Length: 284
Length: 343
Image (cartoon, rainbow over all chains, first blue to last red; front, side):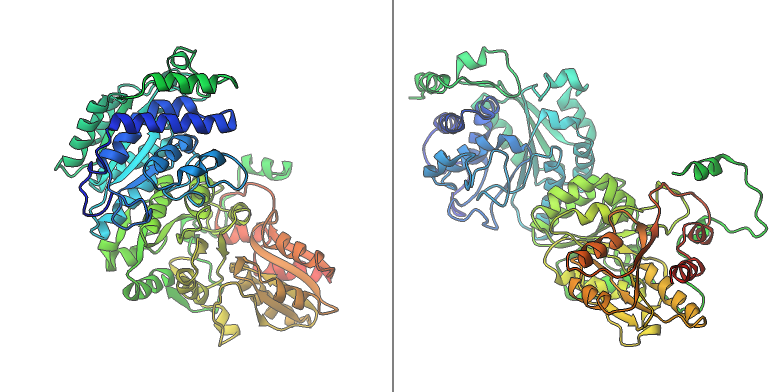
């Protein structure tokens, strides 16, 4: 996407196809390592497709382009998903897919800014992204740069106190250039997020803090497009959050049906089965 | 904590003959005979910020107590009050640095080093971002007790790659370190002396000028070499004057930059024969200047008579600062006494 090209005009390839490509690339990377946070990658693929191919402005050949919308991956272990979308967007060459998680690869298992073009921050120590996003949004306003800052975080990160420091600050500073995306798959390392901390009713809580909050089916592309549009188009001087309820392993039914855990175990022979399953659902 | 000092905390105390208020002691570090400079950090930052538009200031509800209010009053549009939220303070500073600014983020040393460490490590240091952290109440410079006494901040940050550490002695160091912090392209943690800050170094060495990464001899001496940092250089210089009356000739090597350490100068001075080497720091003896110097010397095969002055491995007591400095051996008298006992 170039500065002259309006958002959403990246190509006429459908978001459905983009999301499918992201899932496929993530599965191929999972196969390379024989492991990976594939459940999360499959679950968040629609959110990423909407972010990169509908909402965001960027230049694939210049990942540091000053006018780009910033996309922060607070959840470092979702790196496999972000690599997939960065390849799909032409920011990372697809040939590097086979190096995922290997020595000397630019794509380590947990995302790091210094390794990967298009990776804005080193996430992974959870609860960091939104605070950094607040600072970047402040910085963009100082520079009168109209770009947006997107911060993708997990529901588990709602447990980190630092998240709420940032939530209050974003309202204090009227950061209408900040869009927080919460991937709510209700799954953290030890089990369901809702069994660990009383995260409560999410949208009303963010609203109460002063955010413009939307809660959507994070695997419904039409709903996502509408939510991202509403978040960008809002004229109120307040930050925006899109809580995306997603299904882990979306798109590969036998994995979806498996007892879902934070780290989905996939047997060696199942990667090809998963790819075949995905192939069956390929958009026309 | 030793059993003795533990017991001491619960014993009823006699009422002191001369009352020394705890709160009044926070900024009163000046030994007698030194002039003071008001808020050298705040004023130096304002001067620099007039020339460098990249500089912004942030504080977590402690701008007044870190002299950042001088900057905030002068340039309100470049100051961010982040509220009582230190994790956010450093995360947001990281975000501003990513957008090309040079943020000065201030709080107390305890809160930066203990509460916000992960954010400083991962959001700032890991990417070598130019966030300048300036923190008041270093070591034993408050009588409020362990909640406010940052006795282990240098040990914590010494282990952090990319982080530059400064422990200034006086107003000349504080004013001089500000431009050096900006000139260094990376993160810096500086211990801050605020309020009325004594002018010490130039009284002993009129042409003294702070240089990042440089240790400097402030006073020459044949019998003892004190290698000191922060306010302990002030104590060492005063102790040296005192000891001169007893015909003990004490040299003082001031090491305001703890990391990177000026290894070359420290080795060269410590290698000069016939001197007792004493390190002195306003910090626990675990993991601070003393251990850094010891490592530096031993790895070069330099093994002089060596002693360390610093705070004990304890949570310190509350009380008036002069009392506490006497109790924990940071006062001029105690420093002089101990050096003499080691000769």
